[in-house]
Amino acid sequence: MIGALKSDLIKFKKTWILPLVFLGPIGVVSLTGVHYAVSFEEMFHTGVNNWPYLIQNINFLLIPALILGLTLIASLMTGMEHQGNTWKQLLAMPVPRVKIYASKFIWLIVYLVISSALAFVGTIILGFLLGFHGNIPWRAVVQEGFAPYLAAYALMAVQLLLSVLVSNQSLAISVGIVGVIVSFANVVTHLIPKWVPWIYPGSAAPYTGSAGHYITLSIVVCFLLLYCGTYFFAKHQVK
Image (cartoon, rainbow, N blue to C red; front, side, top):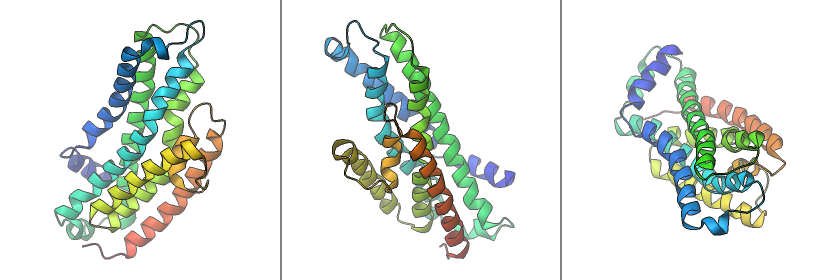
């Protein structure tokens, strides 16, 4: 397993994965900062704790960035294998297919937890730069950074499965883009069925009161999809 992880890491260094990991949260926090700078009088609430409003504003951009980011990272991880026609060479090695599949999923988890940590730190820094006073709602800040990430495990499994089994990465990316639209639609209408994985991250956001439920649901769905993914990957004739 360690060998598969090291091999993937070497290959991933040649892609845009690492820049995406940093650009996602930094871009979200920066855009929120620009929004505050342009409309500070409208967005700053005098006499109250402004941290919850900052968290909600960042979260509004963070959810679609998370969904799109994991889609692109999963696609980059597997797209290089499809484009280089290296699947046959990779699968010819004395490494079980399950470990090859698991390695890519583990790295997807690692990269996204780094992004989540950056979003958490960025929120605190932006709040201080804006001169916010009052007690920092640490629980909400931690939930903003990591709860949507944990609720996105099911999406990670979906996007990795699509990216591995379908060589045309435009399909996986299109599904991810539609997922962003679905997530926005649920925020506006709340009519999307609760079993749809693309609403999990947004439903686990701070102040929703249902983070635990959607995180648990996401992890359960993730395990089921990982089982299906490893099974199909083991049986599928990858070209």
